Image 1 (cartoon, each protein chain N blue to C red):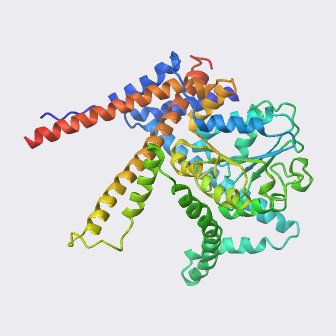
Image 2 (image 1 turned 180 degrees about the vertical axis):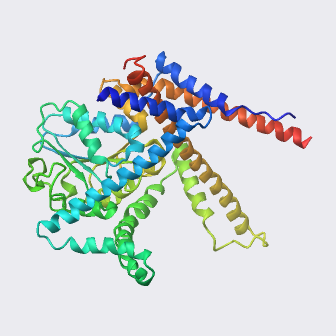
Length: 271
Length: 206
Protein backbone atom coordinates (compact mmCIF):
# COMPACT_ATOMS: atom_id res chain seq x y z
CA UNK A 1 0.00 0.00 0.00
CA UNK A 2 1.25 3.47 -0.87
CA UNK A 3 2.25 5.21 2.37
CA UNK A 4 -0.13 7.96 3.38
CA UNK A 5 1.74 11.14 4.30
CA UNK A 6 0.65 14.70 4.65
CA UNK A 7 3.30 17.38 4.39
CA UNK A 8 3.86 19.20 7.71
CA UNK A 9 3.45 22.47 5.82
CA UNK A 10 -0.12 21.51 4.95
CA UNK A 11 -0.86 20.41 8.50
CA UNK A 12 0.44 23.64 10.02
CA UNK A 13 -1.09 25.75 7.27
CA UNK A 14 -4.57 24.31 7.87
CA UNK A 15 -4.04 24.70 11.64
CA UNK A 16 -3.22 28.38 11.21
CA UNK A 17 -6.33 28.82 9.06
CA UNK A 18 -8.40 26.95 11.65
CA UNK A 19 -7.18 29.44 14.26
CA UNK A 20 -7.30 32.65 12.23
CA UNK A 21 -10.78 32.25 10.68
CA UNK A 22 -12.64 32.00 14.04
CA UNK A 23 -10.68 35.01 15.31
CA UNK A 24 -11.69 37.05 12.26
CA UNK A 25 -15.26 35.81 12.25
CA UNK A 26 -16.38 34.66 15.73
CA UNK A 27 -18.91 31.83 15.69
CA UNK A 28 -20.23 32.25 19.21
CA UNK A 29 -19.76 28.59 20.11
CA UNK A 30 -21.23 27.87 23.56
CA UNK A 31 -18.78 27.80 26.45
CA UNK A 32 -19.78 25.66 29.41
CA UNK A 33 -18.70 27.08 32.74
CA UNK A 34 -16.66 24.60 34.75
CA UNK A 35 -17.08 24.10 38.47
CA UNK A 36 -13.72 25.69 39.39
CA UNK A 37 -14.46 29.16 38.05
CA UNK A 38 -18.00 29.25 39.50
CA UNK A 39 -16.82 28.15 42.93
CA UNK A 40 -13.97 30.67 43.01
CA UNK A 41 -16.28 33.44 41.82
CA UNK A 42 -18.81 32.64 44.57
CA UNK A 43 -16.10 32.34 47.20
CA UNK A 44 -14.61 35.74 46.37
CA UNK A 45 -18.11 37.22 46.58
CA UNK A 46 -18.36 35.80 50.10
CA UNK A 47 -15.14 37.44 51.35
CA UNK A 48 -16.23 39.93 53.97
CA UNK A 49 -15.10 43.55 54.35
CA UNK A 50 -11.90 43.83 56.36
CA UNK A 51 -10.63 40.40 55.36
CA UNK A 52 -7.31 39.84 53.59
CA UNK A 53 -6.68 37.81 50.45
CA UNK A 54 -3.23 36.57 49.47
CA UNK A 55 -2.54 36.20 45.76
CA UNK A 56 0.60 34.67 44.37
CA UNK A 57 2.18 35.64 41.07
CA UNK A 58 4.25 32.51 40.54
CA UNK A 59 5.01 32.27 36.87
CA UNK A 60 7.69 33.22 34.36
CA UNK A 61 7.26 34.89 30.98
CA UNK A 62 6.71 31.57 29.18
CA UNK A 63 3.56 30.86 31.18
CA UNK A 64 2.25 34.42 31.26
CA UNK A 65 -0.05 33.80 28.29
CA UNK A 66 -2.03 31.28 30.33
CA UNK A 67 -1.75 32.76 33.80
CA UNK A 68 -1.73 36.53 33.35
CA UNK A 69 -5.31 36.70 31.95
CA UNK A 70 -6.60 34.58 34.83
CA UNK A 71 -4.73 36.54 37.49
CA UNK A 72 -5.85 39.84 35.96
CA UNK A 73 -9.56 39.05 35.91
CA UNK A 74 -9.48 37.49 39.40
CA UNK A 75 -7.53 40.51 40.73
CA UNK A 76 -10.14 42.78 39.13
CA UNK A 77 -12.85 40.90 40.99
CA UNK A 78 -10.95 41.19 44.28
CA UNK A 79 -10.44 44.91 43.85
CA UNK A 80 -14.12 45.42 43.07
CA UNK A 81 -15.10 43.87 46.39
CA UNK A 82 -15.35 46.66 48.96
CA UNK A 83 -12.92 46.85 51.88
CA UNK A 84 -10.98 43.73 51.00
CA UNK A 85 -7.21 43.83 51.40
CA UNK A 86 -5.14 42.19 48.69
CA UNK A 87 -1.57 41.05 49.28
CA UNK A 88 0.46 40.00 46.25
CA UNK A 89 3.58 37.91 46.63
CA UNK A 90 5.82 35.99 44.26
CA UNK A 91 8.36 33.19 44.49
CA UNK A 92 9.31 33.67 40.85
CA UNK A 93 11.67 36.44 39.76
CA UNK A 94 9.36 37.98 37.19
CA UNK A 95 6.25 37.70 39.38
CA UNK A 96 6.37 41.23 40.85
CA UNK A 97 6.57 42.70 37.36
CA UNK A 98 3.38 40.88 36.41
CA UNK A 99 1.79 42.10 39.64
CA UNK A 100 2.66 45.69 38.70
CA UNK A 101 1.36 45.08 35.16
CA UNK A 102 -1.94 43.80 36.55
CA UNK A 103 -2.25 46.69 39.00
CA UNK A 104 -1.74 49.16 36.15
CA UNK A 105 -4.28 47.43 33.90
CA UNK A 106 -7.22 46.92 36.28
CA UNK A 107 -9.61 49.37 37.91
CA UNK A 108 -8.32 49.75 41.46
CA UNK A 109 -11.75 51.01 42.61
CA UNK A 110 -10.19 53.69 44.77
CA UNK A 111 -8.04 51.30 46.77
CA UNK A 112 -4.84 52.77 48.18
CA UNK A 113 -1.41 51.14 48.00
CA UNK A 114 -0.11 50.17 51.41
CA UNK A 115 -3.52 50.54 53.04
CA UNK A 116 -5.71 48.27 50.87
CA UNK A 117 -3.23 46.34 48.77
CA UNK A 118 0.47 45.63 48.63
CA UNK A 119 2.98 44.01 46.31
CA UNK A 120 5.52 42.17 48.47
CA UNK A 121 7.80 41.47 45.52
CA UNK A 122 9.95 38.42 44.83
CA UNK A 123 11.07 36.13 47.65
CA UNK A 124 14.04 33.98 46.62
CA UNK A 125 14.49 30.52 48.08
CA UNK A 126 11.70 28.38 46.64
CA UNK A 127 9.87 26.11 49.05
CA UNK A 128 12.09 26.95 52.01
CA UNK A 129 11.27 30.62 51.52
CA UNK A 130 7.58 29.76 51.27
CA UNK A 131 7.84 27.98 54.62
CA UNK A 132 9.44 31.04 56.22
CA UNK A 133 6.91 33.40 54.64
CA UNK A 134 3.97 31.31 55.85
CA UNK A 135 5.37 31.20 59.39
CA UNK A 136 5.63 35.00 59.65
CA UNK A 137 5.13 37.11 56.52
CA UNK A 138 5.95 40.48 58.05
CA UNK A 139 9.16 39.44 59.82
CA UNK A 140 10.31 37.25 56.91
CA UNK A 141 9.96 40.03 54.33
CA UNK A 142 11.36 43.27 55.63
CA UNK A 143 10.41 45.48 52.67
CA UNK A 144 7.86 45.33 49.88
CA UNK A 145 8.48 45.70 46.13
CA UNK A 146 8.75 49.48 46.54
CA UNK A 147 11.19 49.19 49.48
CA UNK A 148 8.62 50.28 52.09
CA UNK A 149 9.01 48.50 55.45
CA UNK A 150 6.35 45.80 55.68
CA UNK A 151 5.92 46.45 59.41
CA UNK A 152 4.49 49.89 58.55
CA UNK A 153 1.98 48.72 55.93
CA UNK A 154 -1.62 48.83 57.06
CA UNK A 155 -2.59 46.11 54.59
CA UNK A 156 -0.47 43.65 56.60
CA UNK A 157 -1.74 44.69 60.04
CA UNK A 158 -2.87 41.66 61.97
CA UNK A 159 -1.10 39.20 59.66
CA UNK A 160 1.07 37.16 62.01
CA UNK A 161 1.13 33.98 59.93
CA UNK A 162 -0.49 32.43 56.86
CA UNK A 163 -3.55 31.43 58.90
CA UNK A 164 -4.52 35.12 59.09
CA UNK A 165 -5.15 35.22 55.36
CA UNK A 166 -8.85 34.54 54.82
CA UNK A 167 -8.30 33.34 51.28
CA UNK A 168 -5.20 32.30 49.37
CA UNK A 169 -5.15 32.20 45.57
CA UNK A 170 -1.99 30.53 44.36
CA UNK A 171 -0.81 30.13 40.79
CA UNK A 172 0.80 27.01 39.41
CA UNK A 173 3.15 26.90 36.47
CA UNK A 174 6.34 25.24 37.64
CA UNK A 175 8.31 24.79 40.88
CA UNK A 176 7.47 26.18 43.41
CA UNK A 177 3.84 25.70 42.51
CA UNK A 178 0.62 24.33 43.89
CA UNK A 179 2.32 21.28 45.47
CA UNK A 180 4.57 23.53 47.54
CA UNK A 181 1.74 25.93 48.38
CA UNK A 182 -0.41 23.07 49.65
CA UNK A 183 2.50 21.51 51.56
CA UNK A 184 3.78 24.65 53.24
CA UNK A 185 0.69 26.87 53.54
CA UNK A 186 -2.62 25.03 53.15
CA UNK A 187 -1.98 21.91 55.24
CA UNK A 188 0.00 23.44 58.15
CA UNK A 189 -2.21 26.54 58.50
CA UNK A 190 -5.57 25.26 57.23
CA UNK A 191 -6.24 28.23 54.94
CA UNK A 192 -8.87 28.25 52.20
CA UNK A 193 -6.89 27.91 48.99
CA UNK A 194 -7.71 28.07 45.30
CA UNK A 195 -5.35 27.62 42.38
CA UNK A 196 -5.01 29.27 38.99
CA UNK A 197 -3.06 26.82 36.89
CA UNK A 198 -1.41 26.58 33.52
CA UNK A 199 -3.26 24.03 31.39
CA UNK A 200 -0.36 21.62 31.44
CA UNK A 201 -0.26 21.51 35.23
CA UNK A 202 -3.99 20.90 35.80
CA UNK A 203 -3.53 17.15 36.15
CA UNK A 204 -1.01 17.75 38.95
CA UNK A 205 -3.34 20.10 40.81
CA UNK A 206 -6.60 18.16 40.29
CA UNK A 207 -5.95 15.59 43.08
CA UNK A 208 -5.79 18.45 45.57
CA UNK A 209 -9.34 19.45 44.63
CA UNK A 210 -10.50 15.86 45.09
CA UNK A 211 -8.93 15.78 48.58
CA UNK A 212 -10.44 19.22 49.37
CA UNK A 213 -7.02 20.78 49.95
CA UNK A 214 -8.00 23.19 47.19
CA UNK A 215 -11.58 24.36 46.99
CA UNK A 216 -11.30 25.55 43.37
CA UNK A 217 -9.02 25.05 40.38
CA UNK A 218 -9.07 27.17 37.24
CA UNK A 219 -6.97 26.39 34.22
CA UNK A 220 -5.38 28.29 31.39
CA UNK A 221 -6.98 30.71 29.00
CA UNK A 222 -10.27 28.81 29.27
CA UNK A 223 -10.39 29.56 32.98
CA UNK A 224 -9.82 33.23 32.24
CA UNK A 225 -12.56 33.14 29.56
CA UNK A 226 -15.05 31.57 31.97
CA UNK A 227 -14.23 34.12 34.67
CA UNK A 228 -14.60 36.98 32.16
CA UNK A 229 -18.09 35.67 31.37
CA UNK A 230 -18.95 35.39 35.08
CA UNK A 231 -17.71 38.95 35.60
CA UNK A 232 -19.74 40.01 32.54
CA UNK A 233 -16.57 41.48 31.01
CA UNK A 234 -15.79 39.24 28.00
CA UNK A 235 -12.34 40.05 26.71
CA UNK A 236 -9.50 38.56 24.70
CA UNK A 237 -9.69 35.20 26.48
CA UNK A 238 -13.40 34.72 25.76
CA UNK A 239 -12.79 35.84 22.17
CA UNK A 240 -10.19 33.13 21.70
CA UNK A 241 -12.42 30.23 22.74
CA UNK A 242 -13.93 29.68 19.28
CA UNK A 243 -10.45 29.32 17.81
CA UNK A 244 -9.50 26.96 20.65
CA UNK A 245 -12.54 24.73 20.02
CA UNK A 246 -11.98 24.57 16.25
CA UNK A 247 -8.30 23.80 16.76
CA UNK A 248 -9.13 20.97 19.14
CA UNK A 249 -11.58 19.48 16.61
CA UNK A 250 -8.87 19.72 13.95
CA UNK A 251 -6.31 17.96 16.18
CA UNK A 252 -8.84 15.19 16.93
CA UNK A 253 -9.51 14.80 13.20
CA UNK A 254 -5.76 14.52 12.53
CA UNK A 255 -5.42 11.86 15.24
CA UNK A 256 -8.35 9.92 13.77
CA UNK A 257 -6.96 10.14 10.22
CA UNK A 258 -3.50 9.15 11.42
CA UNK A 259 -4.80 6.13 13.31
CA UNK A 260 -6.98 5.00 10.36
CA UNK A 261 -3.99 5.25 8.06
CA UNK A 262 -1.91 3.31 10.57
CA UNK A 263 -4.45 0.50 10.91
CA UNK A 264 -4.90 0.30 7.12
CA UNK A 265 -1.15 0.08 6.65
CA UNK A 266 -0.90 -2.67 9.30
CA UNK A 267 -3.67 -4.66 7.62
CA UNK A 268 -2.18 -4.37 4.16
CA UNK A 269 1.23 -5.31 5.60
CA UNK A 270 -0.33 -8.38 7.29
CA UNK A 271 -1.85 -9.47 3.94
CA UNK B 1 7.66 53.86 22.07
CA UNK B 2 4.60 51.62 22.52
CA UNK B 3 4.08 51.50 18.75
CA UNK B 4 7.72 50.57 18.25
CA UNK B 5 7.30 47.77 20.78
CA UNK B 6 4.24 46.45 18.95
CA UNK B 7 6.05 46.53 15.60
CA UNK B 8 9.13 44.77 16.95
CA UNK B 9 6.98 42.16 18.73
CA UNK B 10 4.91 41.61 15.60
CA UNK B 11 7.99 41.17 13.43
CA UNK B 12 9.41 38.68 15.94
CA UNK B 13 6.19 36.65 16.15
CA UNK B 14 5.90 36.44 12.37
CA UNK B 15 9.56 35.47 12.15
CA UNK B 16 9.16 32.65 14.65
CA UNK B 17 5.99 31.35 12.95
CA UNK B 18 7.86 31.38 9.61
CA UNK B 19 9.57 28.20 10.84
CA UNK B 20 6.35 26.41 9.90
CA UNK B 21 7.21 26.97 6.24
CA UNK B 22 10.88 26.12 6.54
CA UNK B 23 13.84 27.03 8.69
CA UNK B 24 15.29 30.33 7.53
CA UNK B 25 18.04 32.76 8.62
CA UNK B 26 15.48 35.21 10.08
CA UNK B 27 14.02 32.51 12.33
CA UNK B 28 17.53 31.47 13.39
CA UNK B 29 18.40 35.09 14.22
CA UNK B 30 15.31 35.40 16.41
CA UNK B 31 16.04 32.06 18.08
CA UNK B 32 19.55 33.21 19.02
CA UNK B 33 18.19 36.59 20.09
CA UNK B 34 15.69 34.90 22.40
CA UNK B 35 18.33 32.69 24.01
CA UNK B 36 20.65 35.62 24.52
CA UNK B 37 17.95 37.90 25.95
CA UNK B 38 16.64 35.19 28.27
CA UNK B 39 20.14 34.41 29.56
CA UNK B 40 20.95 38.08 30.03
CA UNK B 41 17.70 38.72 31.85
CA UNK B 42 18.31 35.73 34.14
CA UNK B 43 21.81 36.92 35.04
CA UNK B 44 20.61 40.49 35.66
CA UNK B 45 17.71 39.29 37.80
CA UNK B 46 19.97 36.95 39.80
CA UNK B 47 22.46 39.78 40.42
CA UNK B 48 19.61 42.03 41.60
CA UNK B 49 18.45 39.39 44.09
CA UNK B 50 21.96 38.90 45.46
CA UNK B 51 22.47 42.66 45.68
CA UNK B 52 19.16 43.32 47.46
CA UNK B 53 19.09 40.34 49.80
CA UNK B 54 22.76 39.97 50.71
CA UNK B 55 25.08 42.76 49.63
CA UNK B 56 22.84 45.72 50.57
CA UNK B 57 22.21 44.49 54.16
CA UNK B 58 25.96 43.83 54.62
CA UNK B 59 26.77 47.36 53.43
CA UNK B 60 24.18 48.70 55.90
CA UNK B 61 25.96 46.90 58.74
CA UNK B 62 24.24 43.54 59.08
CA UNK B 63 26.81 40.72 59.30
CA UNK B 64 24.52 37.68 59.02
CA UNK B 65 24.13 37.79 55.19
CA UNK B 66 27.89 37.30 54.88
CA UNK B 67 27.31 33.60 55.61
CA UNK B 68 25.05 32.89 52.59
CA UNK B 69 27.29 35.13 50.44
CA UNK B 70 30.36 33.06 51.32
CA UNK B 71 28.44 29.80 50.88
CA UNK B 72 27.20 30.97 47.47
CA UNK B 73 30.73 31.83 46.36
CA UNK B 74 31.95 28.45 47.63
CA UNK B 75 29.71 26.78 45.03
CA UNK B 76 32.08 28.05 42.34
CA UNK B 77 35.07 26.33 43.99
CA UNK B 78 34.07 23.17 42.12
CA UNK B 79 35.93 24.57 39.13
CA UNK B 80 39.26 24.53 41.02
CA UNK B 81 40.52 20.97 41.47
CA UNK B 82 42.44 21.46 44.69
CA UNK B 83 39.56 22.99 46.63
CA UNK B 84 36.64 21.47 44.69
CA UNK B 85 35.65 19.42 47.76
CA UNK B 86 34.65 22.64 49.55
CA UNK B 87 31.78 23.10 47.08
CA UNK B 88 30.11 20.08 48.67
CA UNK B 89 29.41 22.12 51.82
CA UNK B 90 26.92 24.58 50.32
CA UNK B 91 25.52 21.87 48.01
CA UNK B 92 24.82 19.65 51.01
CA UNK B 93 23.21 22.54 52.85
CA UNK B 94 20.97 23.32 49.88
CA UNK B 95 19.93 19.68 49.54
CA UNK B 96 19.41 19.27 53.26
CA UNK B 97 17.28 22.38 53.63
CA UNK B 98 15.25 21.54 50.55
CA UNK B 99 14.66 17.96 51.64
CA UNK B 100 13.89 19.01 55.18
CA UNK B 101 11.40 21.65 54.08
CA UNK B 102 9.74 19.34 51.58
CA UNK B 103 9.83 15.82 53.00
CA UNK B 104 8.34 16.46 56.41
CA UNK B 105 5.44 18.44 54.98
CA UNK B 106 4.85 16.09 52.07
CA UNK B 107 4.07 13.13 54.37
CA UNK B 108 0.95 14.92 55.55
CA UNK B 109 -0.13 16.69 52.38
CA UNK B 110 0.87 14.26 49.62
CA UNK B 111 0.66 10.86 51.32
CA UNK B 112 -1.78 10.79 54.22
CA UNK B 113 -4.42 13.22 52.96
CA UNK B 114 -4.24 11.99 49.37
CA UNK B 115 -4.52 8.34 50.41
CA UNK B 116 -7.42 9.11 52.72
CA UNK B 117 -9.27 10.96 49.97
CA UNK B 118 -8.96 7.96 47.64
CA UNK B 119 -10.43 5.46 50.10
CA UNK B 120 -14.02 6.21 49.26
CA UNK B 121 -17.21 4.22 48.93
CA UNK B 122 -18.06 3.27 45.35
CA UNK B 123 -21.34 5.07 44.82
CA UNK B 124 -21.20 5.94 41.13
CA UNK B 125 -19.17 5.44 37.95
CA UNK B 126 -16.69 8.22 38.81
CA UNK B 127 -15.87 6.80 42.24
CA UNK B 128 -15.56 3.31 40.72
CA UNK B 129 -13.08 4.55 38.11
CA UNK B 130 -11.14 6.45 40.78
CA UNK B 131 -10.83 3.47 43.12
CA UNK B 132 -10.02 1.11 40.24
CA UNK B 133 -7.31 3.46 38.93
CA UNK B 134 -5.90 4.01 42.41
CA UNK B 135 -5.59 0.32 43.27
CA UNK B 136 -4.36 -0.86 39.88
CA UNK B 137 -1.77 1.95 39.59
CA UNK B 138 -0.38 1.11 43.01
CA UNK B 139 -0.31 -2.59 42.14
CA UNK B 140 1.85 -1.85 39.08
CA UNK B 141 4.62 -0.80 41.47
CA UNK B 142 4.30 -3.94 43.62
CA UNK B 143 7.62 -5.70 43.04
CA UNK B 144 7.83 -8.07 46.00
CA UNK B 145 5.08 -10.67 46.32
CA UNK B 146 3.64 -12.81 43.48
CA UNK B 147 6.35 -11.76 41.04
CA UNK B 148 7.59 -15.23 40.00
CA UNK B 149 6.11 -15.53 36.51
CA UNK B 150 7.27 -19.17 36.20
CA UNK B 151 4.58 -20.14 38.71
CA UNK B 152 1.11 -19.61 37.32
CA UNK B 153 -0.52 -19.25 40.72
CA UNK B 154 -3.68 -17.23 41.31
CA UNK B 155 -1.67 -14.53 43.10
CA UNK B 156 0.82 -14.17 40.24
CA UNK B 157 -1.98 -14.04 37.65
CA UNK B 158 -3.94 -11.48 39.68
CA UNK B 159 -0.86 -9.29 40.12
CA UNK B 160 -0.11 -9.45 36.38
CA UNK B 161 -3.65 -8.47 35.38
CA UNK B 162 -3.79 -5.69 37.95
CA UNK B 163 -0.38 -4.40 36.87
CA UNK B 164 -1.56 -4.37 33.24
CA UNK B 165 -4.70 -2.49 34.26
CA UNK B 166 -2.50 -0.09 36.24
CA UNK B 167 -0.35 0.50 33.18
CA UNK B 168 -3.46 1.38 31.17
CA UNK B 169 -4.66 3.70 33.97
CA UNK B 170 -1.32 5.50 33.91
CA UNK B 171 -1.45 5.73 30.12
CA UNK B 172 -4.84 7.41 30.38
CA UNK B 173 -3.38 9.85 32.90
CA UNK B 174 -0.36 10.62 30.73
CA UNK B 175 -2.65 11.03 27.73
CA UNK B 176 -4.66 13.59 29.71
CA UNK B 177 -1.45 15.41 30.57
CA UNK B 178 -0.33 15.47 26.93
CA UNK B 179 -3.78 16.70 25.92
CA UNK B 180 -3.60 19.48 28.48
CA UNK B 181 -0.12 20.49 27.35
CA UNK B 182 -1.32 20.51 23.72
CA UNK B 183 -4.25 22.71 24.69
CA UNK B 184 -1.87 25.03 26.50
CA UNK B 185 0.42 25.30 23.48
CA UNK B 186 -2.58 26.02 21.24
CA UNK B 187 -3.62 28.80 23.65
CA UNK B 188 -0.17 30.34 23.29
CA UNK B 189 -0.39 30.23 19.50
CA UNK B 190 -3.89 31.72 19.57
CA UNK B 191 -2.68 34.51 21.85
CA UNK B 192 0.12 35.39 19.46
CA UNK B 193 -2.23 35.30 16.45
CA UNK B 194 -4.63 37.55 18.37
CA UNK B 195 -1.78 39.94 19.01
CA UNK B 196 -0.93 39.97 15.29
CA UNK B 197 -4.54 40.56 14.25
CA UNK B 198 -5.55 42.99 17.02
CA UNK B 199 -2.45 45.00 17.93
CA UNK B 200 -0.10 44.58 14.96
CA UNK B 201 -2.31 44.54 11.86
CA UNK B 202 -5.35 46.08 13.63
CA UNK B 203 -7.65 43.90 11.51
CA UNK B 204 -10.00 43.12 14.39
CA UNK B 205 -10.97 44.80 17.63
CA UNK B 206 -11.66 43.15 21.00
